[in-house]
Every structure is written in C-alpha cells, then in structure tokens.
Amino acid sequence: MAGVEAGAKAASGDTIADELIAALGADCVFLGDDIPASAISDESASGTQRPLILLRPRSVEAVSQAMKICSRRGQTVVPQGGMTGLAGGACPRATDIALSLDRISGVEAIDPDAMTMTVRAGTILQVAQQAAEAEGLMVPIDLGARGSCQIGGIIATNAGGSNVIRHRMTRENILGFEAVLADGRVLSNLHGMVKNNTGYDLAQLFVGSEGTLGIITRAVMKLKPLPAGRHTALCALADFDAVVRLLQHARSELRDLSAIEVMWGDYFALLQDLEGERLFHPAPPIAVIIESESMEPHKGAAEFEEFLAAMLEQQILSDALIAQSVREAAIFWAVREGDKIYHAMPNLINLDISIDIGRMGRFVLECVEAVKARFPHVRALFYGHAGDGNLHIALDMPEPGNDHLSHELETIIYTKVQQMGGSISAEHGIGTLKRDYLRYSRSPEEIEVMRRIKIALDPQCLLNPGKVV
Image 1 (cartoon, rainbow, N blue to C red):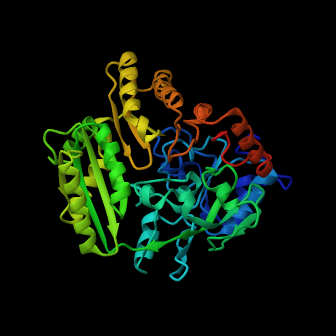
Image 2: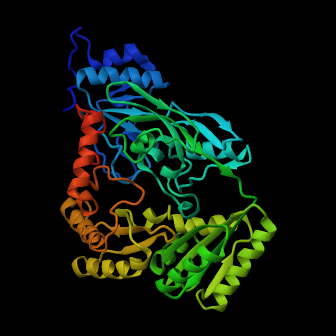
Image 3: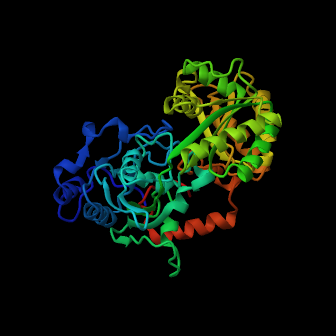
C-alpha cells in the first residue's frame, strides 16, 4: 500500500520512470528539479514534498497506461487538477506519483438541443463557460477560481460556488462521466440523459470522491439558457435576523434569484479597504450581495428594483446599492470573494463549513466567543453563501508554524459545527486537513461504508492515499 522507492526495479530491470517514459513519452514524465513547485501543494499550502514523479499525460489512453504500470508495481498516484483546493486533497508525498490532467483539456462537444457539454477533465472552468456562452448557453457552475480551477477537480470535490441557490451543486449538473480506475480500466458512460434509471448511478459515486476511487477524465455537464440580464445589489442590514427575513422574501418573491452572499461587518470593512473602495462607510453590521438572472432584462431589472424597494420599506434593508454596470457588480463581488485577504492575513486559516441558516447567526456569535476565550488576539472573520448555508471562516494562525495550536483552533470551530449538526466541509472536500474531523459530521457506519467502497474499487489503496478516509 505504500509508494515504491525511486530506484525500485521491475522484473525487466527498468525503473518505474523508465517504464512510464517508454509508455507515455519523455515529454510527459518529469523528474527531480524538472517537477515544478506548483505540483507540491494546492492553495492550502499544506503540501511540502516534491512528488517522486510528475506525469502530464495527453490522453485518456495514456492515463490508463500509466495506471496499469503503477498498479502492477504497487505505486501510489495523486491526481491533480487546477490546485485551487483548500483541504490538501491534491498534495503528494515524496513517494507518490502526481498525475496532472492539465493536458487533457478542451470542450469536445456542445449539444444545444439537449443543452449538454462534453468536456475533458483538465479544461479550465472559464474556458468551458466561454464555450457555452458562444452558443447562447451557460455552465451553471461558477467559482471565484474560475480562471484556474479545472472541470475534473470541480467534479472530484463536488464544488459549490455562488450560484448554488439557483443552479445547485456540481453533483446536480453532471449527467455522464468517464474515469480511469486504479488498475487502469476505463469506466465510461458519457450519456446526456436526465432520466437513466438503470441501476446504481456510478457518476454520482465519483462526484465528490476526491480522486480516491478513480481519475475523472471526461464528463457530460448540463447547460442552461444564458440569461439576458444579471442584476446585482449590495445591501446593508442591521443583524443576521434581517438576512434570514431577506432570504425568505427573496425565495418567494424574487423569481430569478441566483445568489445571496453574506459578509459580517468586520470582514466587509477589511475587504472593501483592501480593494480601495468605500461602498458603505461606516461598514454595516451585515452586508449582503443579492443577485438575480433574467431572460427579459428590462422586466427583470424592474422586478429587482421593486423587490429592493419593498425590503427597504419593510426595514429589512437599511441601505442598498444597485450596480449600474458589469464593472460595478464586479467591484461588489471582488469584496465578497476576498482574493486580497492574504495581504492582511498572511498566515490565514480558511475554513469552509455548512450550517442551517436558522442557526448561522448564533453559530457565528458562539464561535467568536469561544475563539476569543482561548486565543484573544486571533481574528475570526465570517462570510459565505447565505442561500445554501455555506459559511467561510478566515482565522489568523495563532502562532505561525505551530501545528498544535492551529489544530486546537480548528477543533474549537469544528466542535461548534458538530454541536449544531452542521458539516465540516461545504465545498472543498476532506483531503488531509479535515480527515481527522470527518467523524464530526459522519457516523461510524457511514465512514465504514466509505472505506468498503474504497477497498472495492482500489484494493491496493493506490489512488490519493491518506485522503478522505
């Protein structure tokens, strides 16, 4: 079950590197200092070791050949996508082979009648979005990392994003798939049917599996009509109870609601400063981005403005700024997405959890109290997707380099999640960083079934070892 040493020999006397070069070509196999730093860690910065070998195959057939070789030799393999994850799921050990899907990219087909897209795993999300838009359609998945995350990684982690309230998680947008199993066999069912009730839904087994069951190589994704208009507002609210009331009204009265994003005041204040903006000054206790999509832009804009006016009249909102252009909407979203937070918090711990919307306000208050009681100087900033209960928590590392204290801080948060019946991971998966906390959200029986599925599909435990379970 462990990876082989660099000099391990096959019966022929060739090293595994020699055999992979013979099968894939020298331009697809990277060794030593030729392996780029980007293969060491995802965005969690938890990876510290260069893999034994980096593979960059150009086809599904090459992935299959590589896995047959690795299976025969008992060699562990870590699949890698855009490396934008935050759970350490794509980080290799020194004895692992890293297998990047970046060269298996491109949109193969768009069916405008069925509204589906067949796409390779290494395709950048933004590339897929642009291809769909050229056909008057849209990919319903959208993430802040759209310019670098890859379709395979999105599927492997069941990523969410900002449009989940309208378009659901990745899981609900996948129809067919192709994956290479640990022994090199190719499991392919690239259908585009919404209704296909022929036994177990194997595609859904691989969605969210984080590369532990197989290497996703292609998929058929749902597409939707491209909205003619998108309407965005940044709103100020007095407290989280007002957010709950806003969400209730929006779900029932705003026909084309696509996003409700919430930012607590200290997060909003910091990020608008980092972006060089003064959107609300002083910062309100709560700031919310609300957005709707419509096929009739003028009618949709009027309905959107009428809704906001009603919320102001009912004093659910204390103020609202309606974006007058795509650029203004992008400014609102830049604050929410928080790409510049690392400038102010270079030793950031970024957690991603889910909690029932009715408990979210109390959860934040209790987390802040518990963190401050143990770590008085640690900032705890909260923001996320109010529409689906996904909350992001930005924390200062108590003492850079002290893993024990960081673990203690994370345990404080995850204990609160467990007490309130939430999930320790909303959209970034488990990887290695959350593996020890999986029991906080899943029962022993569930974890045991996960282990059985893993062993059934990967009996040597070669794929992404040490991740998830």
